[in-house]
Amino acid sequence: MQRFDGRIAVVTGGGSGIGQATVVRLAAEGATVVAVDVEAAGLARTAELAAKEAAGLNEVTTTVGDVTDRDFAPSIVDAVVERHGRLDVLANVAGILRTGITHEASLDDWDRVLSVNLTGTYLCCRAAIPALLDSGGNIVNVSSTSGLAGHPWAAAYSASKGGVLALTRTIAVEYGQQGLRCNAVCPGSIDTPITQDFVFPEGVNTKLVRRMMALDRPRGPETVAAAIAFLASEDAAHVNGEHVRVDGATLS
Ligand code: NAD
Image (cartoon, rainbow, N blue to C red; front, side):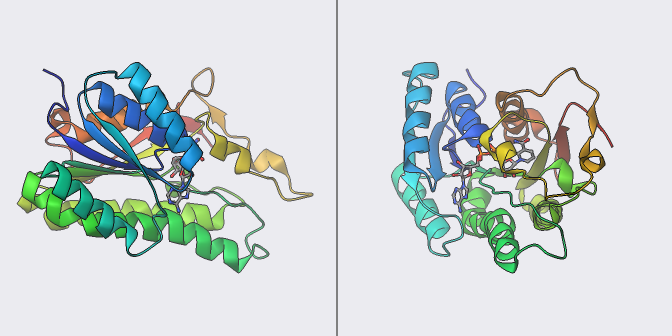
């Protein structure tokens, strides 16, 4: 008996990094998983990986879509419930990063980051909550250590991730009495493609962001996937409205 036997999960951002590792982890623990991403090629790789590492246990399907599209999340939830009869877990992992000096950064970047990271997470929660209330399911949102402390040159990103934490706690207290849990993870120093999107503005003092990590080295996305799987599982039945840092302990 595995932790996610008979469970149905939707994972956004499932085509790369932490989302991909989460799809594989949940599938390996028995879940039927629907992986969602804007990148078709990434999703194809996820399906391959899941077939290799979680072969024969379950089903992993993929759907290309944009979490900022207002019609997308309702359509995915409807399709999942129609096909599988239920939805047990929503993992909101999709996210983007743009950097720049706060008062000079582009407003388009601000809008896009808030739109994907915060509004996209909200749209998926909003669409999934009725099905999760029916199943006694739960939500795991991906925030960031930047949502917990100042992070220079990432105002939109930090604001979006702080918003994700506030949304997480709100859902946790609003729906907890009805049996729906909502938690978050706060990754940091995880080796994935998004970290390459951190571009230092020209001429800034990069020492500002030289955070030291207590642990010896950055680690892979599977370390975050393990925390997401814990929060999504019955092992976390009494954990609600919480965030778990997976960052090797950042010393700022
Ligand atoms: P990643 O770039 O490998 O993965 C992000 C995924 O989200 C990509 O597959 C991308 O295509 C997808 N995506 C982007 N916009 C989308 C949209 N509009 N709709 C659907 N999918 C979309 O990076 P990652 O590190 O795996 O990031 C996953 C999450 O973890 C993000 O929310 C990120 O902010 C968060 N995070 C990562 C770190 C880290 O150190 N890597 C630290 C803190 C938080």
